[in-house]
Image 1: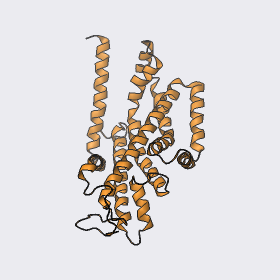
Image 2 (image 1 turned 180 degrees about the vertical axis):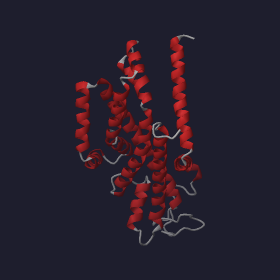
Image 3 (image 1 turned 45 degrees about the horizontal axis):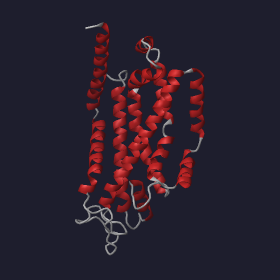
Image 4 (image 1 turned 90 degrees about the vertical axis):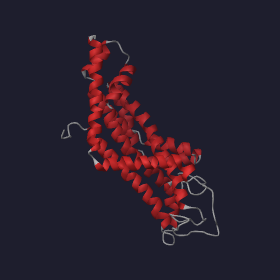
Length: 295
């Protein structure tokens, strides 16, 4: 075996050991495992909703109206006689999609921006991060509202708008990670081999900075879902006939004194998901923090 192959094998073994150790520490965190299990169940249910929902999405019974939980409607019905469990299942599909897609948009923008700023450094870094500072000072809620007003209330635009305002912290984290890694020996070796800056960033720096990024990603998803719920509560998010947990909570808040179940059950679904994501994010942070572990 050549020295180059030996080096690659050692690096591969170290990388594998890092993730194995992280998984071992994560399994010891019961709250994190609970969060992972709940999140997995919600995702599977959301994917299977068209086949497992007890009623059709557009089925309604105006004569029935709002009725409390019963054997026929486990979570009750809304004022239009629509099954609330069915509405929550379909609403979960959009709420989870907003959380994951908008976070993915923020991930792509933030990682790319932070990696370039951190690796290039100098004036480029100063200009790019000053722009981030300026964007931090802007009232992004007004920015999103203006986008909705100018371009219309489009679900895809909602994904992009929320993702476009959530990337700033991710860019700062990525920049800090890249700055701490670019002086490492493996980066200097890649430079001496004549690899391009883009290749070094893509193949060496970004993979080695994934730990904090993964943790922050799991903590960004709940904040994105909360933002969507808030926008839907204001009437600026998901629009009928589509629904989301935020929109259901908005409807429930209007009639909470007469029909409290319309607020309790969608609120419980959103709350449980947010807790699960935060538990998982905290567990990943502890699992990937080698210095803070007791192993």
